[in-house]
Length: 477
Image (cartoon, rainbow, N blue to C red; front, side, top):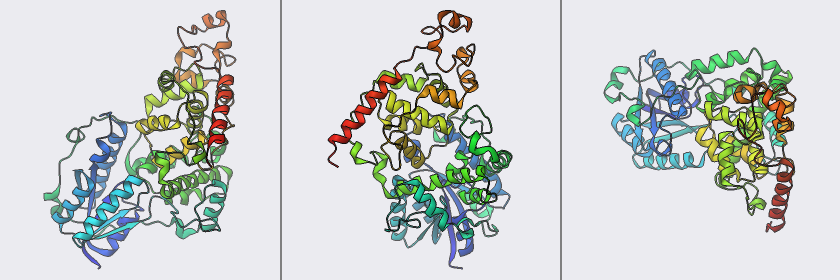
């Protein structure tokens, strides 16, 4: 064995199966301690102390603790600054090495660099592995040896590189975990209350069991994924696995293994979504400036003309555009939003309300259950046309047309906006077209029971086009 004692530090990989860092730690060590930190650098920034995501993490940790207990070991948990806490636990346990899975967010890379330096200063090895993605930079490159900036050629190159080894299973026999008797004196009787948060149960089964259950459910309807995924009223239209991928209760390799079992359109379309995930992680890794700025510098000069009151109405689901409002109300209630709706509401905020995409991105970051910086940033910059491989600035979703196409019967709208439930599908997408008699018949008078549209889409579309054109003309590029 290379190491007498090692520490496997869990972060966004809350599982025991198919875990790259853990499998390497087990193979290279006589004894492995399992460790997790409630990172105060992240938690202290959360305004909402009943944040659903913190509750989900806590629930996943409780399940993880049970799984580890069944292996006659224990999960050691700390609360604080990771740089300090890793240093303290390493000294306390007298380990020779720390094992982690890599993270590509700038703040995480900075954290790990600081931990690495600290470990080197005391002669402890710091071993990191690829686990969060199938391919990381620079494994998939253009023929010129540079990072891809357009998805389709990236996808083609990704698929060309893919082989069974790319998504192999890293599960292993966990026979070298530190005995619970040894861990006992290092344990902390933690709770959400002790770290300053309240329990807020998201309606999602946590942990590895929850992820496996969700994947098994998805197996029954993945064949129709390529069509159903665009319709928010279809309960089984999407996989529902994004939160499990975000917190690593299932590995991306397990999902690729599943996707590769069949060559039907549903499976292939879903695999493409997993490739998009790798693509955005690579973009974030290689171009960290996107965290605060446009990927495309030619749009740095955009003068966002939107109104603060419109931003608030968008957040509250009170814009007078039913599909937008239904999406935003559902989001506020659940912390989740359908992918088609994410594109539509983002386009509406940036190109109808003329509000900076960064404000929308920040609102999503604050509330998304499955918040992932790379995917959230990539999606918002795609919708606002400022990102890599983004839709052209002149492509602007018509929220009424999107509503008629993807919620044709108005089912999703009626479920989220009950005051509109009396309207027929003729008026549900754009109730302002209903005469006073129709409004009374539907028991919904505009301006009283539901707001008038806060902007005119046609007018705002022209303003958006001029705004983008002006920025491009004035750009030094």
